[in-house]
Image (cartoon, rainbow, N blue to C red):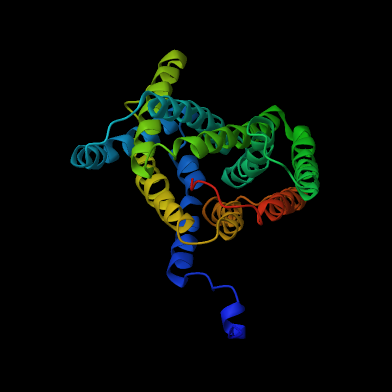
Length: 307
């Protein structure tokens, strides 16, 4: 039996094309918070238009594809898609509002604590085993978040509320990912995005009506930013990221996506001339370190359903 060469023993290098697509996708979704800040409208209003536009764009290709293949939506698939729509609508309301209160950079950072809550939810709900390193990462991230939130409370009620909503975003986004983990076994990516976008838009329409926040009559500039967010960041950006999930190791993708809050913060500094305090940046580094440790604790686990 021949001995394999050293080159054969080395792990295959990442697909350069997929890696480039991932980096572009990461940059594109980093504009989400910027578009929300520029649109400057109520959280549920921005969320409604983001999902409603995405639902409208996806309707024709999804229906044509399912009719061509003779596919039908099962009650379970519809239920999971609806549950994802509930989680996504809650996520958008909390995150969009946090962006207006504390800026896109910090809101995106706190929202990206989702991997921590996903792992915790998988442990509690799906009985997955967590390594000791996970608990180290969780502790580090919580300390960083506590540093940011605790010191920001002295800056005023709005800032404290914004940080709280940023953390709520991380939890609701984690709930969305946990639901996605189950739903994607029943639905393809486009159909899944279509179902949850339709349900989420309907929920946010009701929320907007309850609070008396009009969806119409907004400045044209606001609609332009909301359209750009829906088409570029929500559809375009996440399509690129989802493609990368299918062609690169999941550990590489998730760690790369940690660059999102960094890019968003840089864009915030360039566009709005808003600079985080030194202690906020320090707390942000601690949070990102905790998330990175959580990813490291799960990197060796078998890859699951692509989100």
